[in-house]
Length: 310
Image (cartoon, rainbow, N blue to C red; front, side, top):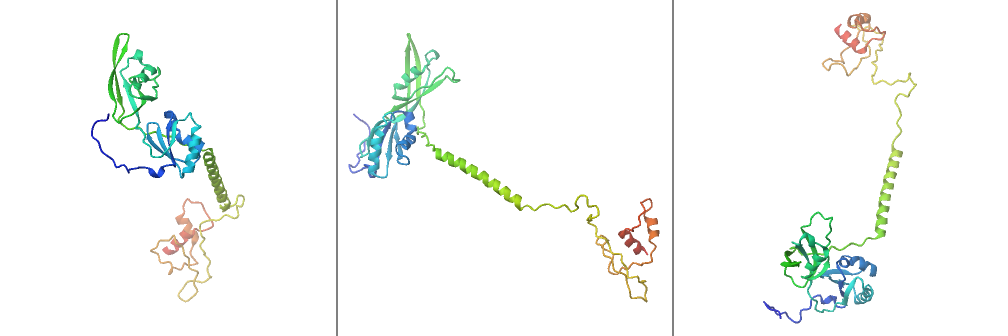
């Protein structure tokens, strides 16, 4: 008999009534089958069914219409190694059940076997995830087991182990966080193949782009082809020293062609400067280029500076 505070609910309350006849309630055989529900559904009805976790090993799977739900119900009954119970959802009452992860510690080392741990966990519910203790484990302080419990109270107990007239205390404490199943995803071979195709296509696009860039790149032509020593292009623009054979005096209007050189000092007025054609250029080379190699061609810059001195 239930005792404690009570609340009376209206008889007309009927939650999830829109799913009556088009959903099924299933209980999986074990925890591994629970995690594989999407994989199992994909084998029975690919792309169909919306899964809702109810607690413990129970789930509600809904479909678009009642015909599909009835068909899947019959198919699921054939997979008896995955489902321990399956029925059509019609608003029936379902019992409460949840999965609790129990931390077992205090078992002496000479009794610390998987069977002993499972027996301890089985005192609080049905063991659905057995202990996995091994001699190779680095931490032997405690071990976990998963059990199904029928109430919402957190487990926190102390029990006594009896062995060979010895008594040992063992503590069992439930993890505080509520457990939510981590369902396995369905992997499609077609998706993996398409992914590989996308990678190959991307690589092909890169190759085509590089080829297109190579075709658009103009061919480099050297300025001075090898072996053509007579066709050397210089970045120095020669100054035109050609004169009109006129003597620059006050009575003669004839003048020589002005020379323009951007390398001269900006303070010098180039437009009013007229060099004399009878200047002694040999004397200029003798005074300003002592010790320098003798050349038959006068340096245009020196010519201009020398004429300005005159």
